[in-house]
Length: 387
Image (cartoon, rainbow, N blue to C red):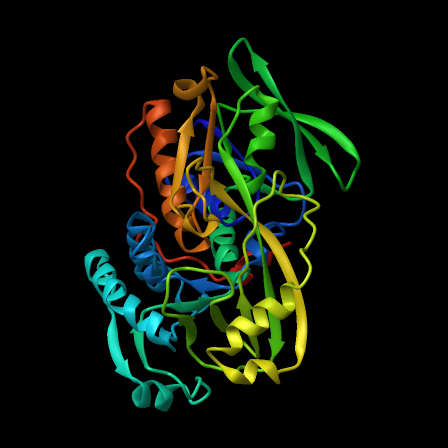
């Protein structure tokens, strides 16, 4: 049985550990901090329908709507299946409406037009200047619990999952990666682990791992901030009906309302400084959709780096594709034994894992079908059973 080493402990790594164990591989996963403490644990919990990307990024839109349906089936207990509204507030929004509806249709996303009265009957807090709304199958996910369902199932199937274990070096024999050097932050000791194949699933930190192998990876960290307000201002996800922009979505998350997100570009994913004025910027933009945002008590603000695939011709960071890709570094860079997966969104974590696991099988020369589209996940609490 081949031993696959996964570097990283976010959502994609969790889904990959689950996928590979179902395919019969021996799996070890190493995360430098607590599981899900990077970007995965710091997003707003929107399970995308793909509607946000239907006009300018149809590849990502189709990925989202496909995975939306799969996650509703395999992990319903981690989701609030509350749907979403895209709201038009002015003539510019109305002008975008036709493109939006056509984009949703072409990507297979259900979109139902509502009058202003119909929308306010569902969500009374919407702005009184509302022109119309479009209902789409967005939903709310628990940013921590959903990937913990994958971890629980992977662990039950034999995956070895180690947190606070940082990969500080790659061992090579010629042009092949053969092992990893681990620093255990709990014992303050170093140790080596050998494997048959190594998967770099560290998200916005993926370039750091590739640097250890002398490889340049086209990753572009894209930090963004999210504001949490006390109180549930809406029951559905509310987004602005316009070209994707900053601070144009409100996600109800338990007894909070999460507003976001902004976007700027950074050279490194760690030690990112928050630009001034982010809270006011986010609150002002979201209050145009739901005026009660202005009166809701402030809870907190946080930010994290998106693992965007670098695009030289992208003048507007919002237009950088949210699609994902995985690389065989033997074909790309002449380094055997290392695979990287970058890009994507929390909604597409399972699909990212499937494509990466397919590549692992291809490299090892085994034909094993993916089973994660229909295999029900264990509840996240099972991860802690017996620990």
